[in-house]
Image 1 (tube, one colour):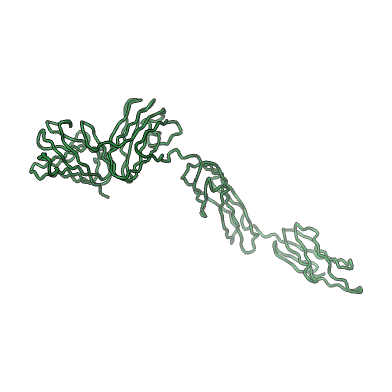
Image 2: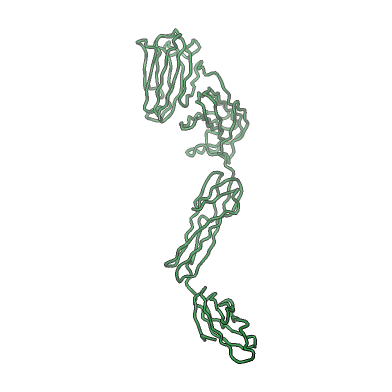
Length: 406
C-alpha cells in the first residue's frame, strides 16, 4: 500500500494504491477502513483506498483483501483555518407595533481572503416578515424568531456556517386609525396604553378616519369624563388643527368645513397622564355659518354663505368667522352673489387680536380677495378670517372660497 504516509487538508483526499500478490486465485481489495473516522474516512475505489480529511489529526488507513491480507498507511489531516471565527446579530430582541420596522445588523468576523453570504428567515411570517437585507416588518400581534445564517468560505480556508437569531415581539398598534362612516356615534376610553397623539405633551387618545365622498360641513362633539377634551381633524396633506378645553369633563364642540377624501380625527385627553371615558359624535350639518360660531376651514373649499341679522356684529357690521391654519399658501375670496343685496364685501384676517391682512370692496366690484404666502401667521398662529361688509348692517348672500397652493 503506497504511499506509506500522506498529508491532506480538511476536505481534501489522498489515494493509496494497493498492490496484491500471491495466492491462487489472486485476492482482490475487499475493504478500506479508517482508524479514526472523525479525522479521516476511507473508501474503496477500484484497486485503491481513498482517504478524505475530516478534521485535523492523524488516522491509519487500512486495506484488507479478500484473502485477509492487510496493509496500512498513515494519513495526516491538516486543519485549515476557519473562514469565519464569529458572527453577531443585533438587536437580539425587538418589540414593534404593527407596521413598524427594524433593521437587523449582521456582523461576521472573517479570515483574510474569506467571503460570506448571509440569508434571513422568519419562523412566523404572519407575525413579521424579513427582507433579504435584514429589514423586519411587523405584520400582526404575536412573536417570532428571525434567524440569520452566515456561510463563509475562501481559498485554503475551512468553510464555516454560523447562525444567530433575534426574537421579535409585535404588539397591537394603538395608533392604527379606526375607519368609520358618517354619522359617527362612539363611546371609548383613554388609558395609559392609548395612542400617543402628540409627542411633545404625550397626549393620549384614539385616531379615527372617515372618507368623505364630497365636501361637507361636519360637527364634531367630544364629551369627556375625567379628563380635558382634545380634538383635531385634518384632511390629507394639511396641518393638524388642535382644539382643547380648559376644564375637565367639559364638552368640546366644533364644526369643520372639510374637502372630499380622507380626513383623520384625533380625540383624547389634552394633558399628559389624563385618562377616562368619552362619548364622541360626528355628523353632517348645514355649511351655513350662523351666530358667533367660528368654523374651521381645512383644505380648498367653496361654500355659499349669508350675512344675516343673526350673525355676530362688529362695530355695526355683521360678520361670519372662519379659522385657517396651514403652512401652504392660500387665496381667500368673498364674492357677492349676483342676486344678493349686499353692496360691499369685506375680508379681514386676524392673527390673535391683530389685523394681519385686509381687503374691502368699497368700490363696489362685488369681490374681496386676500392672497397669503402662508395660511398662518409668522408666529405660527391660527388665522381668523372675518367675512363681512363695508356697510353697517349690510346683509345678503356671498360665495366664500379658500384655495390652497402647493
